[in-house]
Image (cartoon, rainbow, N blue to C red; front, top):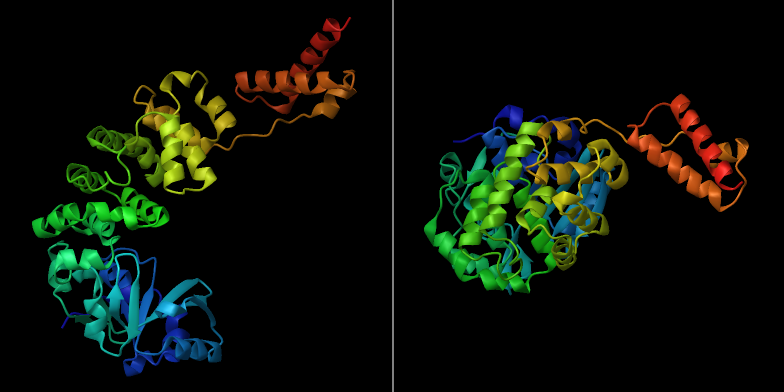
Length: 404
């Protein structure tokens, strides 16, 4: 019998007792499932907590309300309720079986059969359940053995599972990057390659979400290279090629050297050709936010455009964008990046009123003079208010002489 380690389970126990009692977990009506169990067994941090239950979702809502727990019907049509607890949400999903699928969504029916629920999941390591009270693991498809071997397998026939939900192609490579230890199941890989065109049927938001999750793991390069070699991304992101994978790999070396944490969006930028127009097009296609699209285009400005000091550039385009550009340019020293890590761009400690008080006539000259003060302040690497006052005096005097 395999038991979930106590230190994996029960850092959360204090915030879950009321919820578990409401769901009659002690009577076997609810179990932890998926990532919390998988990561708990591996000794990894558990961020998201999911519970599976035999209870009807409407019953779950009623029980949570009776226990004084806020219940949000985030996916009640598919059996999912979110319990809002003081230190984080917990998703509770009623056991399900598939009635029909079309590759994008499934029609489901509820069940009280744990094995039936496990059978509709994608990978064996995702179909592990843990008793909240005893920690005992329920494993219906060999997930424990696969997890110990760091092996990623679909439950049942890989092609059939992909046909049920095309997103499983991208999930396969994300999980391979995080859990697969580079061991490749050739049958699963071939099934993903054969079905790659089906990704075109998915919403671009779902594709972007999975791709960024993949790029955000500690070691995405091997999986990303396999995707490029198999033409997985070609139907939806043809801009990413072998050279792009090499750039991601080089970027990750520089991220590590600088001590800057890895960024999925920065790695996406590295995977693309160094062209802001292409970057914006990809961002629009993936329906990224305006902020994310802007970050991609800033990151991929030509290296020759970096003519300012790192702090001056960070003042103009932002610290995040500057770090991206410096890390993506192998000609820039990594030390310049590290120096920005804890730097917050200051605010110019003077305004137009101070220039008028110095004798400058109100009007267009004030804005121009203030810009000149700011430019000098930035060029001198953001000196203190006393020096800014001296710069302002010089600037006002210059403008007054020009008007004589």
